[in-house]
Image (cartoon, rainbow, N blue to C red; front, top):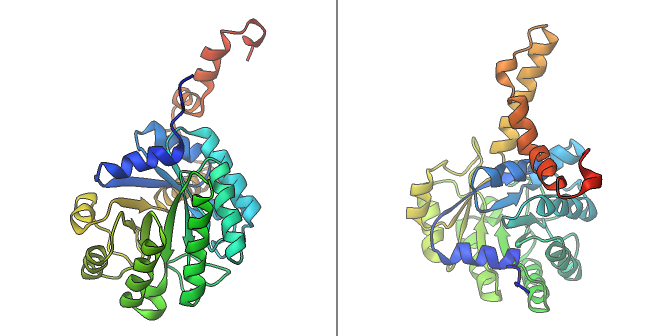
Length: 293
């Protein structure tokens, strides 16, 4: 029997190349499928976009652990590329963090992000966010690593939002401790200048992730520039959601005005194919009782 490569191993292999990984972020199974179809090797379930898509609410800690895990499971079931799950603050104390990490591993995620925000968390590029004290922040990452070491086949993406409240030095210190505790990937959220991005990448070991929010606080650099600075993952958490919302709003406005535009729509045949109708029909031909679809 051929042993299947785990999602975590697929991500480890990507990181081992040392190349920058451009990572469009998904919000549901369909957006993840489109990312894979366009040849990207990694995606991340954006908490911001998933909250908007699933419950129509802002990313302010309103989605429960169960809802987030269910969304992650739907996504991992739909694609073969590794998926990073958004574990937020871990949904409670250190013991909750361990359960969260184990749950994301069972859901098929290659990695899970755990952060040091004060619950309820909020989008890293919006106002009002705060971080917990160092001890609690470190306990969260230690618990996440303990869950991995206990058998959860998953990488730990450790995030700090301390730059906003306490400055870059504190954020770097926290991230360095996260690495010391065993985190696999480091994420210092919302550096404000290229100089800050260079400073944190030079100071921290291992793979680092940049979070590129168009119009947000972090400079919107090219993949080449991010690689030169020292990042290995470039995440784009809102690009697909923003593009989809703009297209839907414009289409609805035209329909309301009695001026629908078919040139704005994906071709019917391509739509069916990308969703999976053609693949379904092709496979169903193997089974006589399934040929009707």
